Length: 278
Image 1 (cartoon, rainbow, N blue to C red):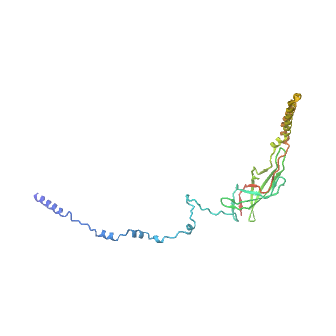
Image 2 (tube, one colour):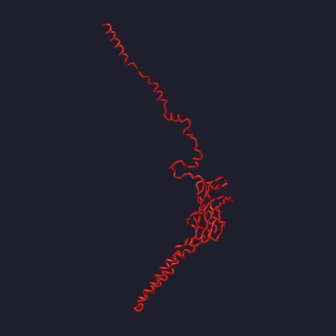
Image 3 (cartoon, rainbow, N blue to C red):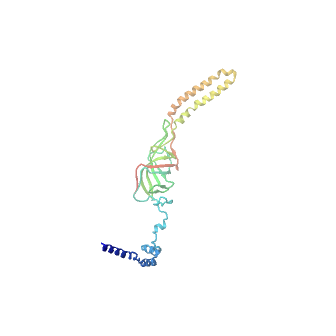
């Protein structure tokens, strides 16, 4: 037993003598520090595009400094508009054109009379532009002069062609604005004068009543004729009432105003069907 204890002590003493015998070899780290260059390491990693030799910008980006994909860009790139030319170009129904008439329009003209319009300024649409001076041709398809009941004259125009570059483009269009006034159902109407005619027909009764009123005042101002003063007023009132009742009836047999539009007035034409440029 004593031998075992002695042997254990000898082993422990032997291990304690070698506890601090490990030394670190730092020669490799010193060599790395001497040869380490951070700037050269960054430059060597950019082997595809060195700093001094970056690829040139495309010509499109050089010429167009404004890019239209950014919502924050103030000056958007606007592609040039397409001017009507030969080819398949569709003009959708419902498209409107502001024009002026180059021929006069009145209700004395008969059916089939040619009516022409033109654009005074270019008309810009989303996909194309109609130049100034483009001619639109149509005809009168219905007309009549003023009629009784104070109904005015009527002219109905249908537009059949648009002339561009010598080519007649077939249209089916009607007028929605004539002589700078909006119209309905393509009817260019003369003035309906019923109310003004009723007022005009009643002017005789109003004038007579005014004279009788003046006479009544004059008779009443003198003592000798005072007793006669009510009679002119009564007569004037009866005539005024009768004239007021009769004037709507007499106006019924009167006629309205004529349609008479000189050249150079503002019109608006609207397509009823699609049109195509061949």
